[in-house]
Length: 112
Length: 113
Image 1 (spheres, each protein chain N blue to C red):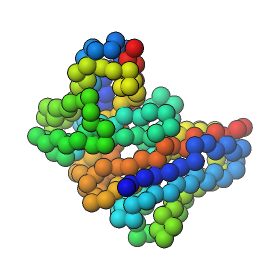
Image 2: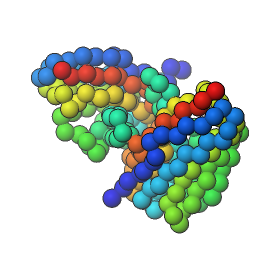
Image 3: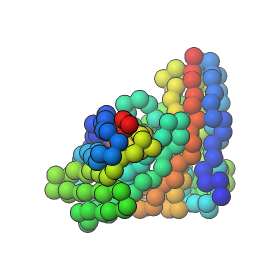
């Protein structure tokens, strides 16, 4: 079945890099996404990667995709206190039906 | 553009009461979705509407009904609320069903006593 797993919590110091990891099971997923949820708010799309790419960089964000191991990571360079949030990875699942499968979310705590 | 809006923001119900959660989008999107978010479980899809006039079950549809009123609006109804339906509910929309980015509303926090 389709499943997406993430570690639940990550704590870093301001200015350090953060790496949030995700594993997924559906190898037919075409897109993999990273969403950010700030306290009391909805989900905001951060970035996404097409499954035939290994890496995508967007300013402070770097997404790495290891399709063989079904492993996705999000690296945030120079992490700021404003980056404190819950980060969800998601895959679009089998058949590209539009049904996103979400991980449990990783809470990123940035200490000053 | 307001994007995706949801009402109400917060609601308390007693077991057995009914209510409808409203969602509207102004991005001319064809597809709309309802998710629930529970601690430690990520988001799970309740129902979705690929286009106006169609609705389909997601992962956890039991206890819910939906109506795609028009292209803009997609409502979620709880006919007889249960404590297990205490959750945060998110509506989302996308241009199409396949390979299109979903945009989320701010959420409705529902507490069923």
